[in-house]
Image 1 (cartoon, one colour):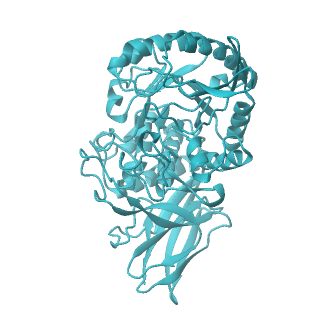
Image 2 (cartoon, rainbow, N blue to C red):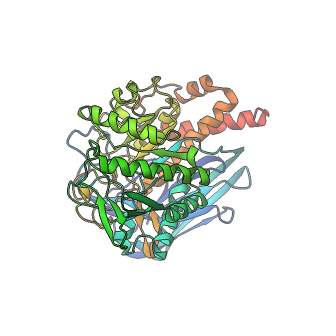
Image 3 (tube, rainbow, N blue to C red):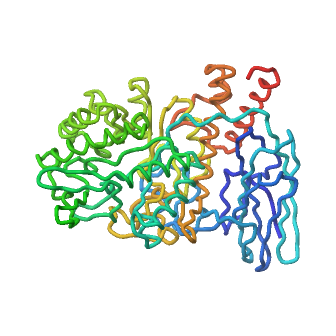
Length: 541
C-alpha cells in the first residue's frame, strides 16, 4: 500500500500516481480552515479507513473523494493550464465519512478539513488501514492566535431552487421544499456565499425561447379587474430562512429575460375565480403597457414590504443578464423604469460593456474577468464574474479539469483589485443547457455537453436532501479565506506593504498572469500567516 499526505491544491486521479511532494506542515488562523488530502493506492480490493489522532475534538472532518464523469473538459480555445483535456473520470465529489472501498491499483484520496487547534502547535497523525495493512503520516498544524475577520466581499453563486425540486421530486413551497433548501442554503453560507438569488418569480435565466423552467415563484399574485394584489408570506419565509442560515444579501430575480431584456419572466397569477394561470412570459412584450402596469403596482407593494422587513439596503435588483451592445437602447429604457420604481435598490447585472455603466443604466456592473481592466478605477464598486467563457488566457475558474490553484488564486486577485463583489451563475444548476431537461449531476457534469464540466454547479444533491460539497467548493472557500487573511494583514501593516508581500519575487499579479506553481500559493498563505503572527506578538493587532 502506498500512502502520502498532499495539499488541497492537488487532484488525485485514479490512473496516475501523484507527483507532488508530501505536505508535512500547515498553518492557519483562529476561525480559519485548512485542508489536506490522504492519497493512497492498494494492491488489492479492500475497505480503506482513515483515522486522525492528535486533533482536538470536532476540528477534523473527513470526506472520501469520489470521481465524476467529465464529458466536455474545456472549450476549443482553452489555454495550456489544465490538468487534462480529455473526457474521463475526475475527482470532485466529497462524501462525508472515514471509510471507502479501495480498488486494486487505483489511486484514491480522503479529504481532511482542519479547523484551528487550541494549542499553537499540534502534531497530527494520519493512519490509513486497508487489507490488513496500516500506513501513517505526520502533519504539524500551527494555529496563529489571531482571528480571521469576517468576509467583507459580497459573493453570490446563483441558487437554483427549481433544480432541487426536480432532483428530489418535491413541490415548490412544500414542507420538503423548505427543508431541502435550508440544507443547501446552510452549505452555501458555510462556504462564503453571503448573497442569494431570490426567485420573486421563476428566474428568466438559461431558458430556451418558448420553454420554461419548473415554477419557483415566491410572491403570490392575484388580479381582480385591472388591479393586482401580492402575497409576500413565502418571500418573508425565504428571507428569514436565508438570514438564519447566514445569508446577508438578496439578489431579487431578473425582471426581464436574459440576453436582450425583450420579454417578461414567467409569472403565475390567480384570477378572480381562483384559477392560477401564466399571465406573463415569452409571449409578453417587456416594454408593453400590460407588463409595465404590473411592474408599477408590484414595485409599490414590494418596496413597502422590503422597508417593513428592514432589508432594503441589503437587496439588489436585476434587469437582464448579459445584455450585449445591441441591447443598449432597450436596456436603458428598462433601467429608467426600474430606477424610478425602486429608487433605493441598486441595479446589479453581469455585463462587460462599460457603456451600460457610463450611461447610468446600471449601478453595479459585473464584468467578466477578461473585461475587468476596462472597469477598474472607473466604477463606484468593482465586481467581476466568471462562467463558461473564462477558460482561456489563464483566467481563474473552477472547471473540474483545471488545477485547483486556478480556482483558489482568485482570492489573491480579488484582494489585489480591491473587488467589492464576485458573481458566478451556477451553485446548483441541475439542468441541461437552456433548461431543456433536468439532468443527474452525478452522470452529467457539463450541462449536456454545453459547458465545461463543473461550470454549472459546485454542490451535489446527496441522500435525504443533504448537499455534498464539490472539492472545488472547498478550494474556492480557501481562496475567500486567503482574501480575508490579506485584509487582516492590511489592517496591521497597510495596503502597500501587504501588496508588496503578495507580489514578492514575482511580476505584478493580474487576472491573466500569476504563478502556476502550487508551492507559490501555499507559501504565500503561510507567509501572510507568519507576518500576522509577528505583528500579533508585537501587539500591533
